[in-house]
Every structure is written in C-alpha cells, then in structure tokens.
Amino acid sequence: TSRSSFRMSSSPPDLRFDFATLDDLPALTGLLALLFTQEADFLPDTEKQQRALRMILEDRQRGCIYVARRASEVIGMVSTLYTVSTASGGQAAWLEDMVLLPDCRGQGIGAALLRHAICAARDAGVLRLTLLTDPDNAAAQAIYAAEGFKFSPMQAMRLTLR
Image 1 (cartoon, rainbow, N blue to C red):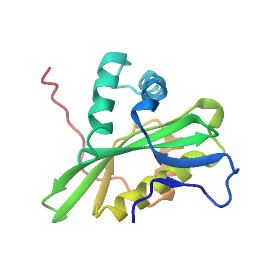
Image 2 (image 1 turned 90 degrees about the horizontal axis):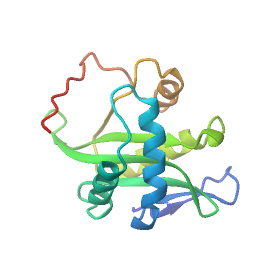
Image 3 (image 1 turned 30 degrees about the horizontal axis):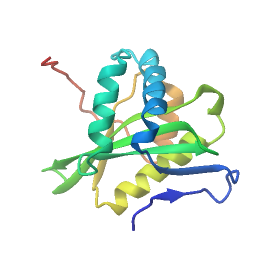
Image 4 (image 1 turned 30 degrees about the vertical axis):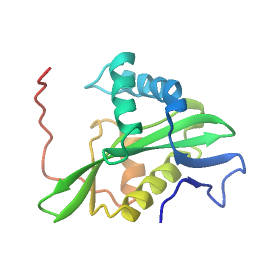
C-alpha cells in the first residue's frame, strides 16, 4: 500500500508525513544545509543539493523523500535511495538525509518520520535499509537503534570521482 500522506494518531492534528514535492525544494535545501553543517564529511552547496534533490523528486524509481509537515511548513525530512542487494536477493535502500529543524527535535517527530520511511520501504518491497551516521552522533544512533538498526562490522569507504 502506498503512503502518500500519514498522520500519527498520537501527534498533533497539524503534523503529518508525506512525500516531498518539487514545491518543497527550498525547504529541503535549507534542511540539507543545516544537516551538512553538522556532519563531518559534507559541506552545504545549494546548487549541488538542489540538483540531487530534483533527481530524486522527479524519479521515484531512484528513491523517495519523505517530509514531516507542521501545518504547511516542512520541519523535517528523510530519504530512501534504492539499489539492489545480491546478499539480500532483492531491492535494498540507503536511508539518507535524516534531519529536523532544531526547535522540532526531542518531541518524537524524528522517530515517527523514521518509522514512516521504514514502513514505506517495507511496503515498496525493500529487504534491507542501510545508513551512515557520524560516530559522535549518539542522539541519532539511539533513534536508529530503537527502530532496530544495528551497527555493522563493515566500515564505509568513499572515493570521490568529481
């Protein structure tokens, strides 16, 4: 079943989760700027982030971007980017760009948005979700662990080609 819009039963009536749209591009870019100032590996670059976000938003075969909205304001986002796993024997996804506005943190919104993305991935036939997190981001790691994510003995490596 496709989840185009979802509201937590215990959440305020003006809070909902749904797919991001091209109209959300400025808000998504702002959230990524916030995220990339907090992460050790990345820097904000509006042009690059808008180009990549547009690629995802225009092709749901690549992945999905989910947003948390309070009234009409985008207050958080998370994305799932699809790939194929030979180890799992089917579709897998990377969970990326999980971020909330600072004044919305600590209210359970991020955990609920994460659960929404997990349910949508399961509904889409995804067999495994993988994510990367900064080693010192204990708050995010606790949220991920509460939803069943476990540390892998594998270590990420990266080669930048451009």
